[in-house]
Image (cartoon, rainbow, N blue to C red; front, side, top):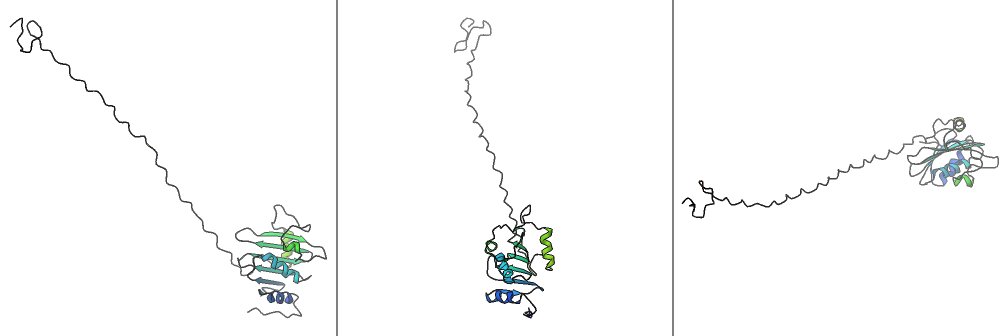
Length: 207
């Protein structure tokens, strides 16, 4: 079970108490770090607020939303590193260097907008050696929350293969009707005089 550290020795004890008073579940995974879970949807806003409650004390603050998205805020003045993971997208890194009077929970940061204090990377929102050094100074080896289980990958949907369309075949043409020619009548002739024989079959010349 998580044991609250001594308030007199732990500068983050008040931060944990404040977040618990707002109804969040707070654990202390390691020295100098807190992890906040709750029904909120914007983990970046919660983690920045936790860092703001720490004042100038160095802190690593994780927040995990009800959708299992998470944010790590690594705050070690003047450096503010924010790493946010949403769904299956790649973690989004942002490194800022704040002036002395600015807090990590300034409204412009809570709204997620760009600011003149951003250290721009190419391509955008990728980790840099300087940002990793801020995490290392807080003894953070990996930005993922301790014990966090990533969501399962979405199922691969295989599109059904459409059956090939049957080829249209032209109907066989009906055979052309051919006229039946009547056989020509055969004329019988006399074998002697070769005259046509009458219907009686007896040659009129030869008898």
